[in-house]
Image (cartoon, rainbow, N blue to C red; front, side, top):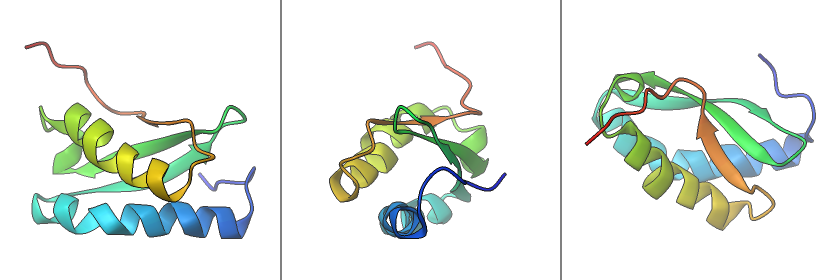
Length: 89
C-alpha cells in the first residue's frame, strides 16, 4: 500500500525517524513498514519479521518507535501497528 495523503518531504521525515530506530529492530530480526498516515495524523505501521510476533512489540512500538517519530515529526499524533497482538501480563 502506498501512502498517498502526505507529501514526499513529510514521508522522508518519517522514514528518517524510523531509520534512527531500525538498527535496534534489525538486530533482533525485525523491522517496520509505513502503511499510512491517517487524516487524524496517526502513523500506521506494519511490524515485520520477529517484531510481528515478539511479546515485547507493544513496548518497543510505544517506547522506541513512537518516541523517535514524535520527536522528529511532531505533526504525528500517535503511532499504531496494524498487526500487534496484545499480550496480557
